[in-house]
Image (cartoon, rainbow, N blue to C red; front, side, top):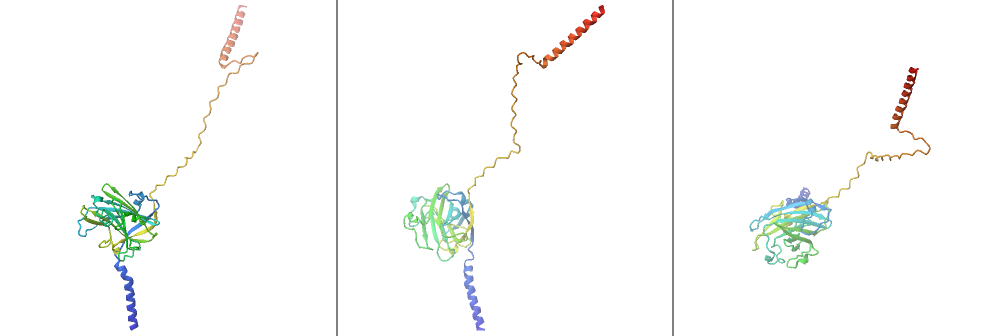
Length: 310
């Protein structure tokens, strides 16, 4: 009996170990599939056409944290290629703090009008093990790698981001664009935890509001991967390149047009050889016949006249 009870307890403990992670992360969900780009992407802050073929995420979820709400929103477009994850974001922001008002851009780069991507490449949803990539409206790049090296660019020149990731920004009417090229070792089929965030500076007094990508969790927290949802890297390739139409073959001609017949060359009249009688033409024959008939009639008349006199 004791053996049965002990066995039952062991089974229950094993079940709890297996079930607990699933219960703890049951709210985590997929944002959707991210296609692979077959097109080369130019990193310049302008939107390549292939991004419209990618996964689109809306950033509309405000996290106030005692700050006033904001009207700032954003749309992000995501594709990937071997070795890289590309994110292009359009941020609609009616007010951009002048770059000269940033008290210490390198020391507190999050206190700028900027866009951040938090990535949990292993999608393990544990602790604060994620990698952070940020680009502000003026193109300043910063990062912090908690999941791997613990390295950050905070307090350093922007150039320390060289070799870590590439990015560009462009101020446009009504806001700004940012574009990320982030190195990664993941391949098709991988799940990558993700949280996207806009830092919105609402005035020059360092009043900040944050806007996040929509999430299935109750609350989005930048440094808690358990609040992230995830993307799925798809093997499907997309392209925005329009193939040049092949030239159509010349229409088959059912019947070749007959070549125009040349008009017969005029025949020059042949001169009659010397000492020969010219052959009368058709128009003269009638006249000759009439003369002969007249001669015969005259002969007959003369003959009858002579007989009547005898």
